[in-house]
Every structure is written in C-alpha cells, then in structure tokens.
Length: 495
Image (tube, rainbow, N blue to C red; front, side, top):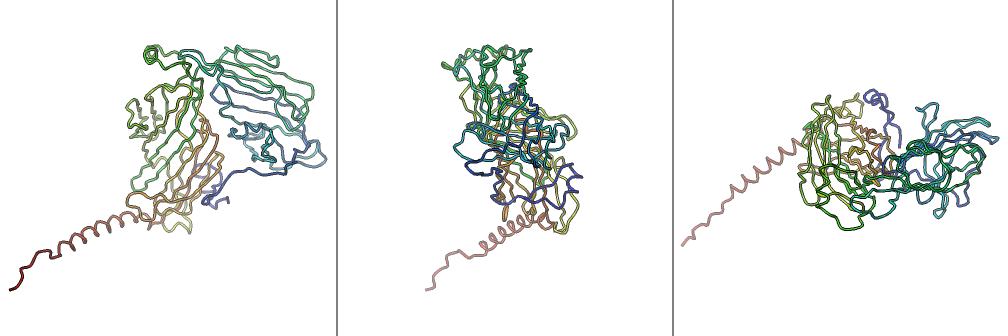
C-alpha cells in the first residue's frame, strides 16, 4: 500500500499518520516463507527478560520486556520471537516498541520456514540496525485467544469454574537468556493446583524467578496453574460490522452481527430453569453469560436488537445526550443464559449523527469540485465486559455514498485482507463504493482503536440520487400517460 499525498490535512483533522490505499482483493497477510532449514541467527542475547502474564480476562495477555544485545560482529536489525505451532494462529495484537521510547514502534510480521515445524516465528524488524555490542530494550505485547481450558470440563449449574493455564517458567526465546523472571496475575487468590516451579506468592500474583543462570535458546520448563474463573469465556467466531454513510441524510448507520459462544465449562446435567430463576434475586457468580453491555458513542439513537427468531425485547437503551455528552449504553439480555458450549447469534444496530464522525479536508485537483472527506469511526465497538471478549474473525464494511472515489484508509488494527466492491441498495445506479477490512484474533481492547477512511465526493455525485428519483418518477408518469392514450375500446363492425 502506498502512502497518501494528503498526510498533512488528515493529520491536522484527527492527529493520525498516513493513510493507505486499498486495492481490490488485496491480501495484507504479512506471512513470509523462509527456507525449510531456517534457524534464527544467533546474533543476539537477552541480557535481562521480564514476562508479565495477565489472566484476569477470558484470554491470555502477555508483555515481555527484554534487554537485547548484539553479540555479532555486524549490525543487526531482525529479532525473532518463537511461538508453538498450536498457538501461532491464535496470536493477535502483537506490537513491539522501544521500552525507553514508547512512541517508537517496530515492524512485526509472521514468518514460516516449515509448515510442519512445532515452532513458528514472528520477526521484529528494527528501524535502524543495532551496532555490535549495543543494547536495546524491547517491550513486546500480544494476546492469545482460546488457550485457557476449563478443568473440570463439565460442572453443575451453580458450581465454581476453574481454568487451566499451561506454560513454561522459562520464556520461550530464540536466543540465550542471561537473566529472567515471569510474573502471573490471577483474577482471584483461589488457585488450588500449581505444578512445576516454585513461585513466590503475593496475593493474586505469582513470580517465577529471577533465574540468574544463563538459559540456552529454546529451553523450556513446563508448568501449569489451575485457578478460579467463575465467569463466561465470551468468544465470537465471527463479527460482521457494517458502517453506512449517508451524506444526504446526515446519518451514520451501524449494524453488527455476532456469532457468540461460551468457551467455559459445559453443564454436567440438564439446565434447571427453576434453579436459574431463583438465583436472579441475588445474582451469584456464574459461568453463564447473563447479559451484554454495549457502550456506544454519545448521540447514538434508534437502537435495535434481533436474533434468529426476531426482535428481542429484553434490552434497555440509555441515551448519552448530544455529541458532547456522556456515552450511550445498550444493555442486552439474550433469550436464554449462555452456558459453556452453548451458542447465541444476534444482531444489533443504531444510528448516529454523521457530523460527529465526518470532516471536510482541503480540496485537491482530483476532488471533482466536491471536496474531500475524512471519516473517523471506531474499528470495533461491541460489548465491554469485565471478563473480556475475543474475536476469531472480524469483518468491517464501510459503505460510502454512491460516487465516492479515491478511497484510502488507515487503522492500527493488523489486517489480513482488504477488498473494494460495490454495494447496491434502493435507487442506486452503479452502486456504493464499499471497503471491506478483515482482521483475525482481535480482542475487546481494540475498542480504543480507530478506522480512518478518506474519499473524494464529486459535486456531480451529490445529485446522482435526486436525478435518479426524478427520472424514475417521470418514467412512471410518462408510462401512465402513454397507457392512458391507448384506445382499447371495441369498435362496432360496419355492415
């Protein structure tokens, strides 16, 4: 993707970086294929490594702070991060920054050298090669979905739920490590089973290490912990999000379609509705999904909540007032409690004032007299839950006004696919320009990330629909007039 020429105007409006130019069916996967006999060159060593693992949500979050040193005789700029083959397809949100300068981020990409290898690698590319004997402090963050396993796999309706986390007390690394330690933060102090290692316990935090003896590259020390997590493991196998821009109506219409599942422990027996109804009076902790809380931008209105059956009336909407007021809130209650292994698919939608999301930018020679526009919307909205929400696949469609051209976009969320198509609706002629963005392994923490779309909207395109409506009405009248002029009477035969 090429960098746009209107960086200055866009940055002035929203304070962002350059925008990218989507191409139809363009695959954005950064996976690079390397030779089968590839091994990360031993050009670095980890001087000191600290791994922070957070288990407070229904997915795994990790931050690795490591001081690396170039031990080669030449400058180096590629650092490899290993993951097991069973985990690499579940890793998302991987970011690498300079610990001492958080605003300085590094390029990350997935590389593959053997599809059947038990280890795969992400490659971190430094913007400037690190000279020999020089050091750099990396801060690497990522999350891994669908790795926490309920144990036992089946429980009674009111039982506590426990999750099993399996890991290595030595942080997996492609390079030797001189000193390291691992900290694990749990959501509770109820941790009945700990195997492998001898952690120091302080409340709900375990610390493994520090290990002051050098550890060779690839060394692992298996360990596991079982801890209480009596909350649902909310996971969406697919989220389809549509954002439709109507400049004539000044409206931004959003619709989200969810395919949810609870990855928690399944029920060991039948669901007891009487027992469930009795617990609604004191709301004890449960592994079932009771309700979803969806915060919306201020000014949202006209919400709806439907599922495969039809409209769901068990919802409550609280408006946040105008565009400068508090955020709105949509509280959703499914038709039934979603226990472990159960699924629930539904859709929600709402409208918003387009003025809060769309801005004009400086005109360019390619605008066609109508001026350019910059649209800034959240890449992800959806539920905000204490236990977190993970998404295997997210598809975002931005449906622009008919006649929009020179479309470009930017988002902080890593993408695996971009497609530009036409979306035809009522009274359209050629169809509306639509940009479809696909992301994998996304979590609810992406709610704070924006999607910026810029496009040109020619002056002539603004009158396309009124002219179409006018011509359509005239065609009806002319057709009716023509039919009315026909003589369909039966004439008398002359003798």
